[in-house]
Image 1: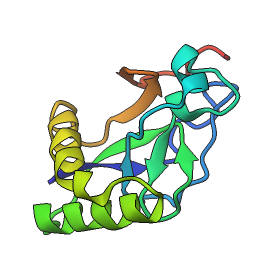
Image 2 (image 1 turned 180 degrees about the vertical axis):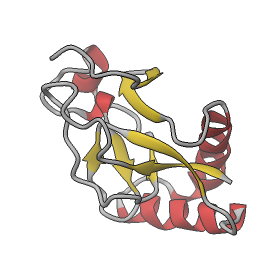
Image 3 (image 1 turned 30 degrees about the vertical axis):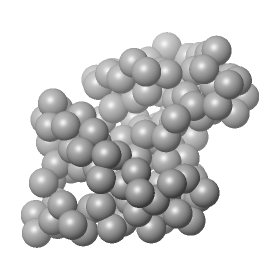
Image 4 (image 1 turned 90 degrees about the horizontal axis):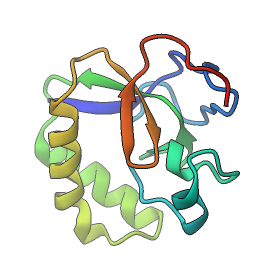
Length: 130
């Protein structure tokens, strides 16, 4: 099963990168706040971040990883628990899992991704600052 996990790879390629997650932690793509919707470089950082399911912290880089033996049921339970802990509706876990699995399936294992609002790209080389 291909999933997104937190990674420190390519951190620092952008001046406003941050990595407050645990390396290898399952992550999700949380909706942006109003400020984040206006710019991926907003102070809050939510529209350039992926959110850690355990730490509830953010990172600006995600790794597409293969997690053998990890089941859909395992994934939805991890999402359900995290969503509930963070005040999101836990009943959304199935829908979120389906969307994230479809998203991850479009990328090769080992790909490092960055987010800029609703635009996602592979980080091949360091991006220019800012």
